[in-house]
Length: 395
Length: 111
Image (cartoon, rainbow over all chains, first blue to last red; front, side, top):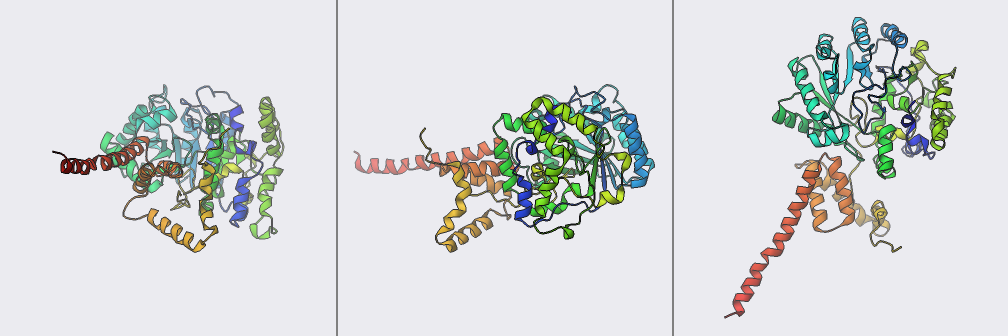
């Protein structure tokens, strides 16, 4: 595990502000209610190194310990016809650089999975060996969800690296030429992240801006815009701390807590698979090294005693990896050891033991980073989850 | 160290104005919410107007609140800067246009 991967609010905020917010609004502890999405993170290898990346992905991350190998990919492929999720969401890194990416796509199509999504950074389409990638995606009806923080080059390149905007446009034009984003069956989504320590704009309003400006300036089309809140973990957390914005941003998330966004949290209908096959409630928990709670036994909210919302914080406090992550905050050199301890943990939930029934009702591991998904209009891998937001900035 | 006259933390305490005459505070906050909510103008347009006015009335709390509010409404630095220039132009213009009054007075009393 890269040291940055453990950077997040759980390392330094034992006050458990997320649990306190749930308690304040009388929201019961979080449980899954179904599995619609299987999100597979095939690893950290990427041709870019973005400043907001919660994965700490980059060109240097090419080791087998941080990228999915054939054996785990085989386990994912074996699970697909049994689980039959509505959506297989393949992410990374740049997932296309993993040699198992295309196998996963082909297997998902063979298993009849309705939606197969590639989280694409666009510039990967021009990497050596990926010349046929766009055609492959189109032939297999893969839904492309592509990062484009802004329709201006400035904010995009500041966040994702010099020249990324121009390459992204080139990628979008290539996808458009294949029929993506033109109103047909090839779906092209764009992802917007705020370029700093503030919440993203309303998705519906910004989508209109994106569509108008990308069409007017570049003759580029797409289908949907997903606005995703930057999570205070990994590389973005590091930037927040270095720039003196960490506490301010956490306060923004706390102040913008929107109880209406809780119902749409992606963790309630998703299971996340790590490169080594470990199961998580979401990709963010994966990056913080917080697997599914080892008990995995469902505790229905109605069966929980009054004050059990404390149990939500308790779920974190009791989690074996919690202590490891907290230690890592004070012992920077210990993080690798902690990761090693996790890998040897016999209670670690793995894809080979995927118990669909239990996972559909599991209790969700939460932490203060979850405030990122409940702020304002909410946030998920599919964008905002609530039609409005709870915040009117005031005086 | 000298204590600053304005304290950023005070912004979060704005609702405390309701400690006395909460009925009046409630009327203000209800009206404020309605004025800033969705309407014929977009949330971004209202945030940029508020940002411009904040500069014109030189309220540090309002500048903090609507710099954040403008960003969260999807405005960028160019739009925010243009809004402040509009405020400054009106402020400057309102100063300069009084020069006509000055000229009238001058002309009245001058040979």
